[in-house]
Structures are given as structure tokens and as C-alpha cells.
Length: 287
Image 1 (cartoon, helix red, strand yellow):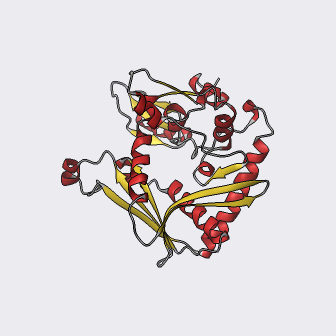
Image 2: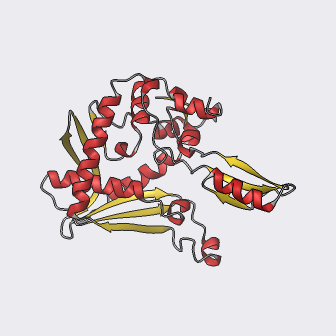
Image 3: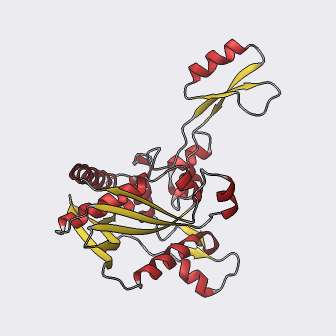
């Protein structure tokens, strides 16, 4: 991956935010499995061509710094332990931030934005934690609980004072119990995902199925009932038929406006998008 330096930042900064390949050949990490097969493969195939600017990768510094601080703080737990388990023709890997052996609890340090907490968007963390639990189980270590400790990098004390629904502290904990049913479902999910990636590697770039709506962080498409002269929607519907029905009831001054789903990851957070035919399609209005 090539890193540019449009702002002429110090060389130390550029090196700090430069990214190395996350996975060795034939290996997929717990976090990688949360991505779409298309993103995983296009990133791997075009790694040497992908270009990012150092200024756009600044958040990587925060995550690295947080992990370094907690990793080097002595306690009775083990830190940054690596696990590797064969799955299908590949390997699934994971590096556990901290494991409390006495309480059989995994801890994972995160830097996150406030919106993740407000929208309770923790499905990726849960999948990651359960993958770690599965890998550790395969190595003879029991996990009863996962705790994610999130440091909110954009937390505002003034907003917390006036809004009870806003996170009240810049540190938030997301946790869940690990059950036998969870581990069985996780094993099946991991096996299916690895086999999907292995099959996709046999295809050309454009033949690989697009990432799912969840993997693209896509908001669902909506149909808005609008009124002439009004800028905001009267009501949003999930189906065109329902929107048409309401607009018809309200009269000729009303009409329906289609609002396509927005794939937020494709637009702003996918490094391999320039090599993705799905991304090019949505940028061309689906053509």
C-alpha cells in the first residue's frame, strides 16, 4: 500500500500511520472475517496499487497508542496473545488484547465514535469477541464473558449534560456472556465465511459477489412522501407502494421521492473501492 503525504507531515507521522498487510497468506483474522469477501480479496490482490494519504489514516494512531498503553501495563492477566486455528483450507487467527484467567473473561480495547454507542451498533464487536472465544476454546481455554472497553474519541461533556441519551462518560463498556450455543453458531459462521472467501479467490474481481448491505454499512432505501414547496419529507416508507398510497390520499400537491440506500463504507471507508465494479456502479447511478 502506497502512502502519500499531501500535507508534508513529518516522516515520523507518515511511518506511524503507514499500514502493513494485516493477514499472512492463507490466514484470516477475526476482524477480517467481519468484512465482505470482495473487499478482502480486492484489498489483497491490489495491495501494492492502493494509495492512501497519511492525513486520512490518523485514527490508526489512536488505536495503536491505546493498545500499547494497556499492553504494557502489568497485571496478572496475559496480553496480546495470538491464536491460530485451521479452518477448511485456511487458518483463522486472532490476537486477544487481554484475558482474565481467573474470571475467564476476554477484554478488548477499542477507540470509537459516539455514534456507535448511540446507535448501539455492536454487532461487529460481538462477532469479533465470539471468534476470539472460539479460537481460545480450540486451544483449551474457556471464555465465559467478553468485555469491550471503548474510549470515545469525540465525546462531548457539554452534550452529555443536556442529553440523557448521550453517553455520559468518554469510556463505555459493551459486554456479553458467551454460551455454548454462541460458540456453536460462531463455528458454523466462521466455516461458512472462510469457504466463501476461498471460493471467491477463484473468481475474477468483477465476478465476486458484492459485499452485503451490512458489510457495506448500507442504510436501507426509502420512499419519501413530499409536498410541493416543502424541503423535508412528510413521512418515509420502506416500500414504494405504501408511499404512493399516502401521496394519493393527500392530493396532487404531494409526490414520492426515492431515496436510494447509501453504502457508507463504500463511499468513505473502503481502501479498495477504485478496483470494485460495485462501487463504480453505485457512483454511476447503478449503471
